[in-house]
Length: 298
Image 1 (cartoon, rainbow, N blue to C red):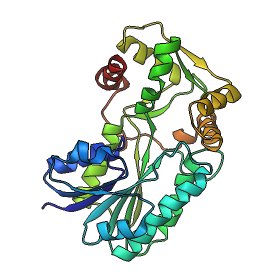
Image 2: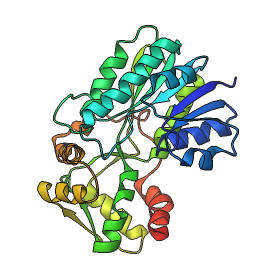
Image 3: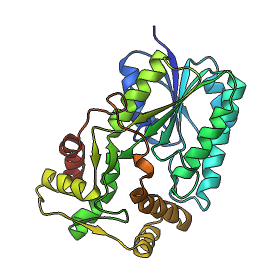
Image 4: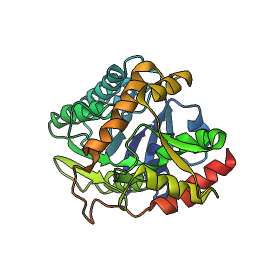
């Protein structure tokens, strides 16, 4: 049976892929995004397009009313002067809309490492949002705890092109679960359409296996004809200064490096890997099909 499904952040890395899957399955999909790309990307699909700010509780309430399920998230805002305050503003608007609309099924994008409320940078706000969502009565919520995105490698394309190196503030040789956003979207879309979860549940999506940043660098390098691509571990202050020079706020830069440097403490290795929480896309396939194409087009 076809469903009415709301997708927030419909032009983002995960939301856009969820939207594509649900539209192709013939569901009535309501897409919400502030980006000007909403009409360009989905105007031909027959989806209901709702341009607007996801901090607008009235807009979200109207969209959620009568819907079978909704995908919500705390999107990145690299210029936020106070990132936690921004996360709370977005999260509280969604929760208010859930309460007022009566929607009963919600899939919320969280992260591996959200079992901790401090010492994990950007992820701490997701942990806080999980707790708030757990207080909702008569609402089924799936916390989708995604592993580290393989797609984050796309952010380093200019560094690789201009400097001939890959870089991170994370410890280079500590393996962590990494996942393609296409795999996360597939799990989310299935849950949104099937409504096969009850109460408050945590659903990890951990990719096919664990990778270190050194290993990922080698895989990326081979996909673009640079088999000797080297990974440089940047000093924290140098990395922060570099981010700030690119327009990222000091507060967000601090949170990013705190998240990356905390990875060696095992925050993303908390969940035991099983066949159920693993997903199919390997780093080699991602590098070949996504990264190399983006790198060559840049």
